[in-house]
Amino acid sequence: MNKQRKLCAGCYMDRKFYVIGGQDGEGNNLTCGEFFDADRNEWKLIPDMLKKDVPIATSRSPPLLAVVDNELYFLEASSNQLKVYLKKSNSWKELGKVPVRADHSRGWGIAFKSLGDELLVIGGGPCYSSSSSASAGHGMKIYTCSPDPNAESLQWRILDIGSKPTSHFVLNCAVMVA
Image 1 (cartoon, rainbow, N blue to C red):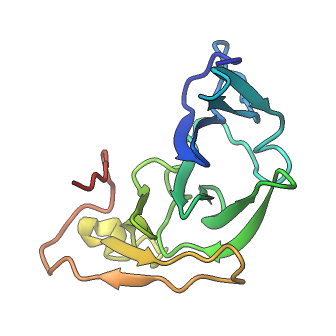
Image 2 (cartoon, rainbow, N blue to C red):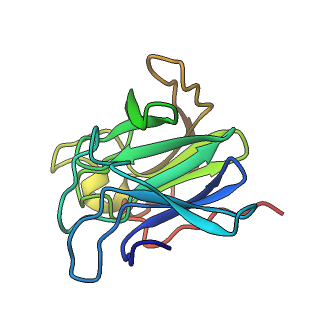
């Protein structure tokens, strides 16, 4: 890679492996991304991939990224906004808020993944008050949607996970399809 990174995120899109955001070795926030071009066997830098439309906060999780149908989606934790990356202009388009609290712990404790042709978000539900069941440890919800980068907003649907009380904080999440 061109830049030393930690707290970054990686994804595979357009037959290339991307690494986005994070911090350098001294803890400075990185707004650039880069991708590995296997045909040329080299890393290419994408300046200001996050800076233009994405606020960078300290003490936050790595960028919450998912790729569906070769489109890059980003859950911006401080605002709970879902954004899609516009490759040609190196900018982001807002698609609306997700139905979980990403802002509660600066992106930590939720899962944002792709699963086939859908986005999957797991975390505390949309009730934001401190007395809600989400805050009481019973609020983990799983939502999916079929994203459309041209849409003005997305339609999320909740998956039934039963009535057993669960924590609203996801410690770690991986989605694998066999």
